Amino acid sequence: MPKPIKKRIQKKSISEREVMTLYEKLVDYYLENKKTVYTWIAVAVLFIAVVSGIAYYNRTLAEQAESLQYEGYKLYHGLYQNDDKKTDEETLRAALEKFRAAYDKKSSPITLLYIANTQFALGQYEEARKTLNEFIEKYPRNEELLPLAYYKLATVQIEEGKREEALKTLDSLYSLKTSPFLKDVALNESARLLEEMGKKEEALKRYEKIVEDHPTSPYYQDALAKVKEGEKAKKPEAEKKDKPAGK
Image 1 (cartoon, rainbow, N blue to C red):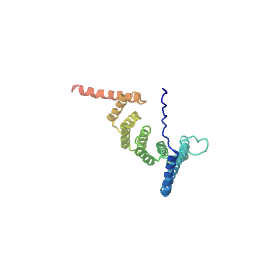
Image 2: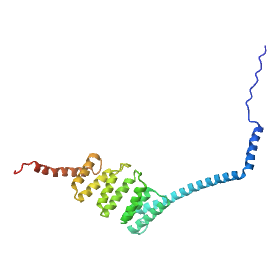
Image 3: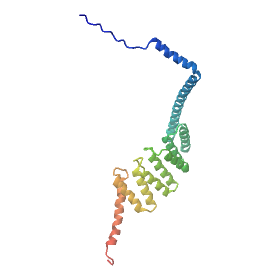
Image 4: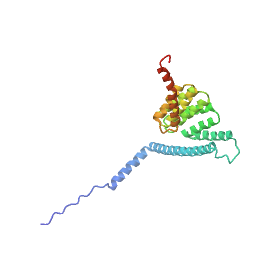
């Protein structure tokens, strides 16, 4: 008995008529909503143009800022000394102009810090202090540069004779939770200031902190010597107290 012939199941395909129907619907929609379609096309084109323009503008500014910063960097570090006969002050002023122009093009924490350093080198302590305070306010989470800004601010305050303010700034540097850097520097500088102010006991506590918490610090040996010196000074006083009266 011959086997029954199985009919092949043909997969349904989109007919040409169905494609034409979809195309016709789109054409009808376009004809009925020309204004809306043109509006959305115009919006899309404008959006692409704006985004592309902003990207190009930012890239151009970044390149210009980088170039200006490099020019300022070379001036600040004296790389132009053999090229002209400018005085140190003139060179620093030229560097400051470059750094400011770079920062105006594109704000950057390193550029702002260079502005403050250049102002300090020129003896513009008030301007440097304002710039550093701006840095601290604007970049509170910059782990690498924020400690440097605090340290430089303390240096400015010391130059201005504001030692109490400098101590507070160094304490702020030591207490920074966003960065582990320059803790030993803050302790050493504040200890040195306290000694100059005649507050030897407070200074000794800072040196002890360096010895306890920063054994690899470059200030460790000096701090250890200060601690031993303080212990020697305390022994005669302790002996006097223990010695019976009249002897």
